[in-house]
Image (cartoon, rainbow, N blue to C red; front, side, top):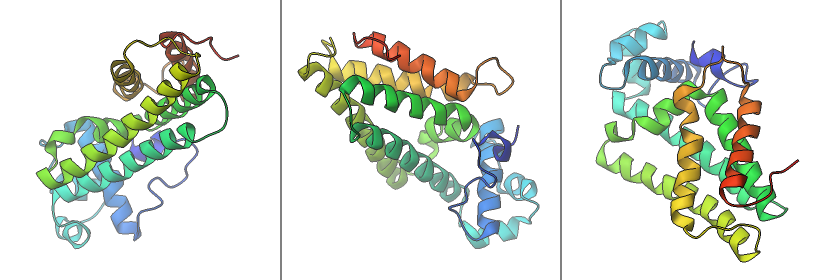
Length: 209
């Protein structure tokens, strides 16, 4: 399944990337990295999938690693936006945690190919880019930890180990990208609802109706 078909209601994936040639190369890179892995993919593979010559790729991206960094940065920015929006939203801690998990899981399921690259190719980045992405991951961790801490303080959650539980919640959500199959019996929305229920049980809250 191509990256163009994995998106949720987006006619043109990576629409924030321009010009169009750079966007097409990004889509092709996501497909290639997800199917073959970063190290087994060549710039010729990526250019071929985009219907372009290898020379054309270098007009937009100096290296294969620069392409991976662009994909990773956009994906992590989106993930952080999802979690921060929930953390800063209205409602009880349980409502905000449910919203965070629903949206985060929905993105990882609906964009499972992109998410696999974003989440599992971190070690292929150069030192500078890896440091940048790790910092974004820490902010995502902090957003979820903030919600759980709020719930503990309000007496909504029973969580003896907030850092460990935060890690467990994020790991549970991220792993959806590894196994989700569009031909499966659950939609991204249904998986999001299921995981929100599981996470609320994990923290000792009453599941949301």
